[in-house]
Image (cartoon, rainbow, N blue to C red; front, side):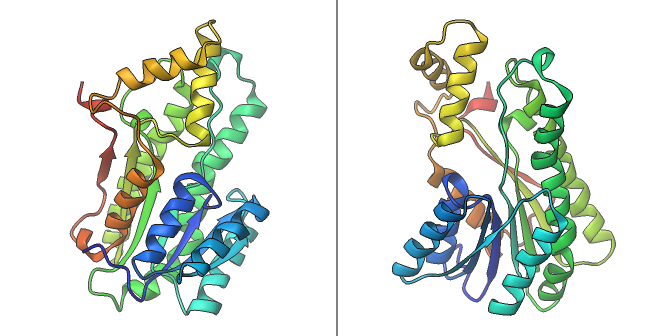
Length: 267
């Protein structure tokens, strides 16, 4: 189940957090993994960890807002591993400020990573994914990291929600666009709830500041209450979902959103 034997994956923002855990899980499932990030030292350490555990992985510097970096990342996958079967658009940015306080420069940075990065990743990887997909039973796969904030409104993070809503609809649109062209490339999104990563910790700080208490533990407790399952998520919860979407077990899924949120959006 959920095996990736013989497949090659490129994961953006994979030096740490959800991306790094996804790389680990994909390597365990048999994939050769290219880790892309701007955190070179951390990324190389993640690669060393995977390789020492018997997996295959390489690191490449990848600023998702730059076409040239995407070209180099795809070339790394093709030249060293022979092709590209899976793209995970994981890199993302969270600001955590009230939208009335955000300047255009900050907004442009958020858009550049959360939207332009997904656009460029999909565009620049499409030829390699198309080539491998044509010879695969269930085609190639793109998994986009969206969020519950891309499904329901966010009181404290409307700009983040706006970008993740864009990712949600871009996922559906590219799924049908690839299908219209006859490309065997499946595109799905995954929608995490609040996850205990560095970004998750940042959300607690930001929310405590926005409500004027600066009580981070209370902000965490409030987030916990929004998850009926009784806990916050961890990186592995999302990584396992990504591996499923990338595997042939999800071969009849495209244009779908997998919600992994501990019941957050069920209320």
